[in-house]
Image (cartoon, rainbow, N blue to C red; front, side, top):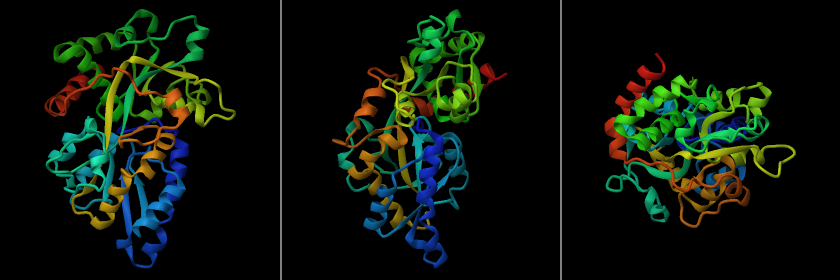
Amino acid sequence: MGITKKAAALAVGLGLVTLSACGSSGDDAEGSGSRTVTLVSHNSWAVSKDVVAAFEKQSGHRLKVLEDGDAGQAVNKAILTKDNPQGDVFFGVDNTLLSRALDNGLFQPYEARGADSILPEYRVDEDKHRVTPVDSGDVCVNYDKAWFAEHDLAPPKTFDDLIKPEYKDLLVVENASTSSPGLGFLLGTAAAYGDEGWPDYWKKLKANGVKVVDGWDQAYNEEFSGSAGGKQAKADRPLVVSYASSPPAEVVYADPKPDTAPTGVAEGTCFRQVEYAGLLSNAENPEGGKALLDFLISKTFQDDMPLNMFVYPVREAAQVPEEFAKFGPQAKDPQTMDAEKIAANRDQWVKSWTSLVLR
């Protein structure tokens, strides 16, 4: 979500992206690169092959996808290369980093067709239309059900629980300066404890043995004992900052599929993220980029998203698969923060967080 974003199984996502990206090579070889539209995104982009085929048939453009790491890293690189962009559309800037992208002129205006079908609570920048909402998700602490059962310990439910002695040395989080979910978790604590209270909370969290790693993939697939990757890596942290939609990924990609998700969500730790896409300034193929933005909010794409990128659609009446809704429901009362407040405080908060937690 960078809903940024996200909770999809990374290996599967990469496989799907490779298939979609390969389809563009023929046009480039024939010298008709203007018929190729290039999407720049974070590593969690994933889409079904038939959905890519539908876009290509409908638009006449071939889709090429370039992944660029975690959402935070991808946004920063896109800003640095805005005068000579890597592609035509950027997908994956979320509400935690949106003001940075807009203030740096990353996008040019375009109102996507069908924008009136987007749920009102997700709409932003409606006077200039520089970005289009695509999905939403909740950054939350996930827990390893089996670990807590084996240790006869109730899993945490709230931010306050995480600083209790019984949860010492159990939590792994992402770096707020490099990772979208890491930043989302920081903003969640700022929303919960206020401008003055969040630093004291993080002091207590640090004293309680929180571990910080660079990005979501390392945290979830290498450090978290509840994920399939973590089990293979013999991870020893049963708490991780991830997404409310991570548990259904553990069900959908398991073989055989379990009846219940092996991981759970501490709903009192959630922060709502919204991800956006935009037409990059100086895009080589702006017409293809506009067609792609139209498609990203089409019912075809929005219905396909949940079981590929494990995020919620933003289009009215989009379909959410049963297993996704069952194992990864949206948080009922997530922390939120106005975009203006994020813009005014984010950089200083990240600087203070870095000094407080990493030094």
